[in-house]
Structure formats: C-alpha cells, structure tokens
Image (cartoon, rainbow, N blue to C red):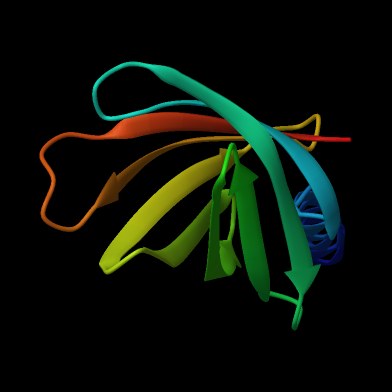
Length: 119
C-alpha cells in the first residue's frame, strides 16, 4: 500500500511540474494603460538569459525602454529604466502564453496595466 501511495504522489508531483508556466523568447504585442488611464501599444522582445531570467525591451510609440526580467512559478516580473526613472512590472503568466500585469514607475502615483501577447 505504501508503495502504491508513494507512486501516486510521485506521479502527482511529475504532473504538477509538467504544467509549470513558462515564458518564451520572442516578440510580443503590447497593449496597456498609462498612469492617467490613456492607452498605448507597441511591441516587446524577450531574450532568455537562463531558465528563469531574461532581458526585455519595449517599443511603444517613440519610447524604448530596456530591462531585466525573472520568472517565478506563474509570476513574471521585470525592472526597467525609462528616462531617469526606475520602473517595475509584475505579470501573471496565462495558459495561452500571454502575460497580464500592472506596472509603476518611481516618483509617480498609481499604476498602469499591460498585456503582452505572443506574435
């Protein structure tokens, strides 16, 4: 009985790890809202640097910003520099490969939203 139970638990553990979220390298379409509620769009490119870390670059309108990012379970976070301010965004990794999150930037009140959809 203990062998069967141990086998069942091992099987559950393997099934759980098989369903772990991941973020793929590549280009994503960006849709978001600014701190004032206005909308923006563009693209973001993610380049994997390890199994859990990456580099990210956003091109939205005439603005380009670069940052570092990290995947932890189904959370994906990125820190970036925009002009002279530091920003932070935290996304939830969705089952379809998209990322949905909220962001803020130092010295500003509130937060914006953003969705990245793989191209």
